[in-house]
Length: 473
Image (cartoon, rainbow, N blue to C red; front, side, top):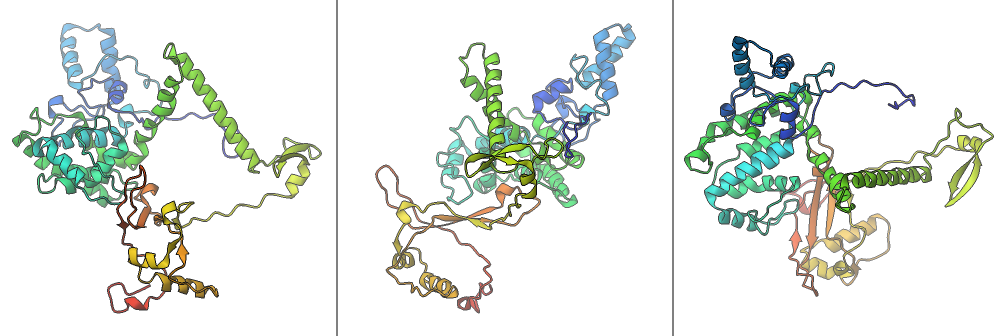
């Protein structure tokens, strides 16, 4: 591998974490799919919140080897058969991890937020049970009547008619599910567990809250059986059992979001679906690999071109003689430049600045040239003109803002929050909307007005709020 100092060295990586969905975990662990790949819990006890003996590498390899040989006496065969069945193994020998050094495959499986929690426990089980209790029509009606709010998805057609869901849609449902079923069903332990397990960093307090949420679910889960929402009447479900290992796995590997299969799941589109569509649907394997190889070649050359044209090429004296010349782009033209010139005139570093807000590149056509009097009336912005005038006066401008002056408006502003270690960067964005009602035009439907309330610290004194709850800067 190429190291940071430019040298190429031999590397012998150690398999420490194995990211896979449940069927692949069982295949790698050489166990049947009605068993747990981490522990030896019996299939009928997976619904209990009780620890079980972990699987051990030496014992598993011994049993698999004996099963492969099959040369045992009758008493030995009887004991072997009982032990083999209790561990739930299947004859896969030798597994690929047999000769891997310092590798315990049963301690390498990581949490899978997408398949185990979002798609499994929440969508396939909890939503289904709650729908059985309240009725599909009632659940759909609550989703449709949900108040529209920025950052929350509005399921205007309900959820019962959707057959294929994505991970982002599962998470959008989880954000509002507790509030929607409130009054009809009291079940929030599973949703609490999902949100705690999705944190980007953990403390002893958050891990204890994660365990408490799991204990609360197991304490009250029988209500689904009593109300006949869970059929068959048991909780011997592999994905529910996997929740019991989350606290231990997070202590072992760190936060679960680093091993989520949602990121590589997106690659199915680039590396499988698009490649298959590019083939003639016959002998597609060879065509797909050839298509992917060409796509990667184009991508590498494109990245190289951007890197070279961006001026990031710095020739090394180890490779080039000072008298040699290079082709360097100068205002779109390739010019032969001596190496010494490049060394004596290094490119200045580009400053980086993180803006605290962002706006659209263009104003919407319906919000251009809006008179100040209209803004004051339709937006309820009574202090718009005084604020504009204060802005101009602070910059020594002689312009006088008048009610008939037109202004180009934006529909929204994206505010970037400070970095929070526990939250994803995609969650550190607040969107504030301020738009008047837009009438229907041709095929575009009418848009209702949106006005979001935001408290923003500007550092300026506002005498109009003195003595009120909003007093401050």
